[in-house]
Image 1: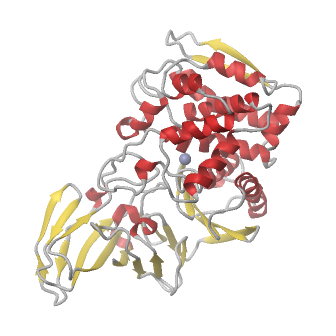
Image 2 (image 1 turned 180 degrees about the vertical axis):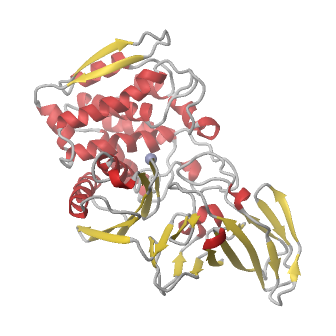
Image 3 (image 1 turned 60 degrees about the vertical axis):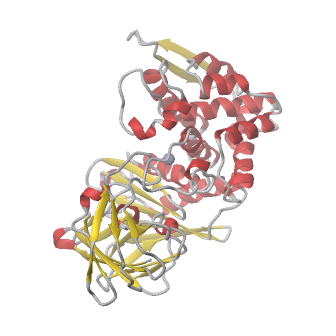
Length: 483
Ligand SMILES: [Zn+2]
């Protein structure tokens, strides 16, 4: 599939042309993704599309019939190649959408590029018609200015892009891998400090995982005027949208570093260590999976823990950060009706809204709590010989590196293998069940010398507040926080 994209800044439009070889096929079904990886809910990108038309290789019009909310049927009628044309309105600014104006072009291809059913594994090419002085930030190879190549549609739509003449670029290298930080918008921070802190968590993550899975990686940062916080993980990049820009060097700085560390950890967890239900992605409908608590819970946990191991957080700062994350669960959903597995499945229902009181849990917050519990339980059972780090490394070796998806059962089996004993209680209560967990957490934290104070909230919901008390330095705490 070959795409040509021509932005029209004044109308905030992307004019898109798609060429598909069609010799072998009686009909072509064209699908616009109904959702995007990283946000497991239907997205309705089709509402941004203007009319779709198709012609054959003699420029004669072909009939196009819409068959679902985001799927079109074309009869090539013997044409060797079909050309499809449409326009996409790009005017939503966050880490997962697209934007075109006179300042820059920002495209998440997953929003706007139709694919022909059955062609998803074929190589793709994108030709961008941009002003001559625009530079492109994108993880894809660019054999020619304005030309991007992807080995498949899956890789193409996992490679967002920013292009402008005002973007700033910074870079650092760790063990031969090059990391780029691209900033669109005002740079109100010290690039030296940022590079030092990014390098710190990159090294800590690579130490834990034993290397890095791609030669180059791109952080694409939109520094926005408005208040904003969002990040999305990709194959060899991430997009982060953060604001207000003038606070990124001060109040928002820990948020930026925390978000970047979280997104980088996703390069293993979920991007490559992928739930089997998401391999390959089916972009035409919901892809239910029960392991959202692994994808986001472990990433939330390690995103911050690795900042402690990198020295960005002192132990006191790290425990305060962890305390905040835990209370987002304990103060709101301690007695919620749905388990982590059920809430993972139901991401497609209300995963990205507050939801009705007492219903679901957050796979981020309770998922982080579950990761902490498992980590401490394994450390206690193995006298600090093993930890959740070993579980993640085995997931990487057996699933991520081999591109074999994992099931919930694989995660259970690997955790039990590392722990050396069945973890029935943990999985039944914390992952598949809805038992309130403050007492188990208090017991687990004692292993690293921490005391947990549990305060009941006066709202009659069974919610509580927890306060982690910093211990004296001890061996187990050191191993946990220093790696
Ligand atoms: Zn995440």
